[in-house]
Length: 137
Image (tube, rainbow, N blue to C red; front, side):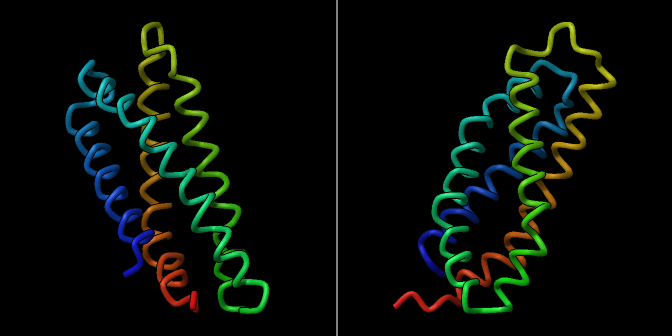
């Protein structure tokens, strides 16, 4: 397994563990909110690493490999939407949670959690495998 994919998978495990801990603590609890906000920097750095290192290599290979091109096209819109959902969530709640409508916070967190979990599964099941199969010699 490449160093990049190892690192990305390790970060995925840490992200999912933190999100599950937030779910256990409850997004309406102060502990859950603190834990979630502590994830922001590492999550955005992770997305940046994928955008800077993973996707450019896959896009380059897609120029002459239809299977990678098809895979990227299949996930492109979803991946952009997930990145947008994550960034918007943190922007919306960057000033904290006081005065926030609790039902809306719960709904926003569930959407955030679901989108991120789906992205991680899609990346690990499809995109990371494609990356591993690239001829980088």
